[in-house]
Amino acid sequence: MRQQIWIHWLLAAALFTPLPALACATCGCTLSSQAATGYAAETGQTGSSGWTLGIEYSYIDQSQMRAGMSAISPAQAAVLTNGVSGASAASPGPQEIEKRTINRYTNVALTYAANPEWNYTVILPYIDRSHGTWGNVSGDRINAANVSDATASGLGDMQWIATWQGWLPTHNLGLQLGVKLPTGAYGNQNVDTGIPVGRSPTLFVSGPNAGAPLDASLQPGTGSTDLILGAFYEQPVSQNLDVFVQGRYQVAMFEQLNQPGANFRPGNLGVLSLGLRYEKHQDWTPQVQLNVSRKSHDMGALADATDTAGTVIYLSPGISVRVLRTLGVYTFIQVPVYSQLDGYQLFPRWTGTVGMSYGF
Image (cartoon, rainbow, N blue to C red; front, side, top):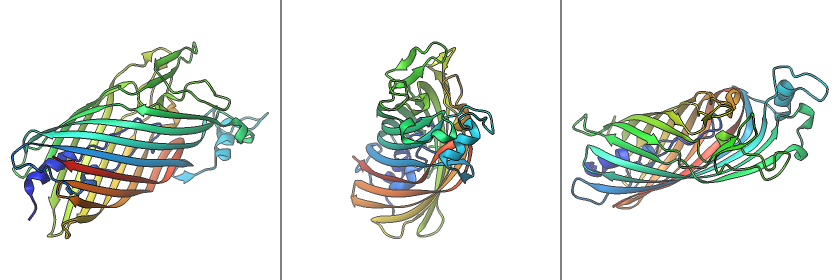
């Protein structure tokens, strides 16, 4: 028999995967930590309150250039948008041609469950992102001499989320309301004056762009205050199978970068996850998720509006293991099975996530 008290707490406590600042439609983690934990850790309390600590690491290597639903080489994209030396492009340019982006996200979340109906979570992400780009070069200039590199690392944008599970007596339906705060470094430079704007923006360290700020959408933070809305539902469908559905929507409400020539607003982001868990075994739980994300265009003078929107679907198999009575660990691989991307965007061939949840 399942211990319902920690199942209800972890329904919400495990929902800590943030929707990070995205430079494209594909570089954020879409995995739902609710199914990832598989309720493998309990709070260790016998009353109606308790704490849960969650730590999650995600690796996303965007190494493939894609347009629409297909792969395309960087040289092909450069010729189509920027032409070749002494010739015109096949479509309006200029447009940046990116080389590679590697994202490493470490998310730490602390949840307090006041009772079976209410819990509160604070999420602090650490971003480590390496990025290389050829810039707005023509097709015959895709070479090592024209690559500019930067590494953006530091604390990202903090999130505060409240979850209410009082709608049903079983507490398996939850509604969420949260806010993302502009705590991470952000900015770029005014496109009219060239004056740096924002707070401690990362700079390129090599190549033709050395000394210039990294794109606003690639900084550790976005400089925006965002509203977060979410809901989830979990239900056993047989003796050994549980299913769940979770949706989250994030929209920027206020922007620190709001001046002419220096404004930036991240695109709205929605994520829908469906999951199936096989719970025959008490201490280990195989599971699979289907994660669908849709991101709208970034906006503003500092935005790469052409190449930041799209829809992506990932198939995500994984397993959770209960190591101790109050400690659970999990690992997942996400494999993209569908993409419809606007413009030209770097895309991951796979992503990996490991995490743990400890109740006390």
